[in-house]
Image 1: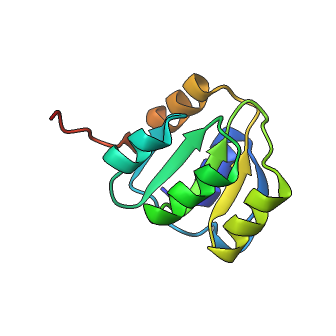
Image 2: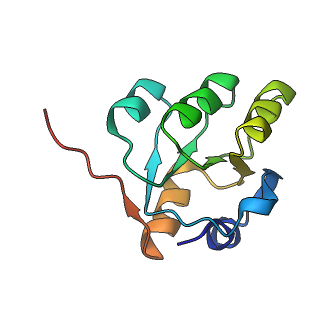
Amino acid sequence: MNLREIKDLLDAEIICGSEFLDREVNSAFACDLMSDVLAFVKDKAILLTGLVNTHTVRTAEMMDIGAIVFVRGKYPDDDAITLAKDNEIVIMSTKNILYTSCGILYNNGLKGSNITQR
């Protein structure tokens, strides 16, 4: 699924990175604990979260996550937006809650990141 489809499905606003909406993603990962993102995100995932700060963008950068969807209509501060632009990370905001956003994407064929138990 590409980011443009995700934007349309979630009725999301593009905050930055509109030039990268043709990127493909293989899975979605949803959480507010960035330590879980570091531990479990797999290749070409999109991150859905309510945590709007530069730490979220830094985590996405480290994990090679090309897009972040902020839920519940949340909007990042200017520092987070600048950091995302510098790292070519797409940021979107949707009015949907996290649960609904994940359900919409799952029902339209986007799988979740598989977590291997330790």
